[in-house]
Image (cartoon, rainbow, N blue to C red; front, side, top):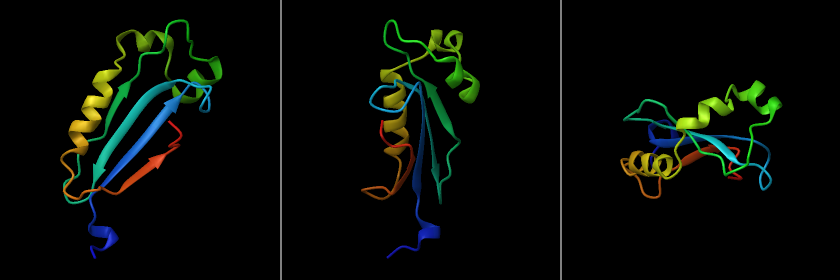
Length: 101
């Protein structure tokens, strides 16, 4: 068995407009930690039509509606999938903050 300190781990984090299932995903961030550390990646996620970033959420996350003008959706998942595909172990260990999304 591989010691924990030697495992390559995928670390994920999400920012959202509210707790699931009411909220919308705002940002998806990740990094590979371990033997082959990768730079942290983050992608803003386009909100559904009519959805807004609550003032309190903007204050906490720093994510504002103008920032979301160039946000992506499918491209975020594709970038995460491509980076995760480079992990050496299957299934790869993952640490996920606020995994309800």
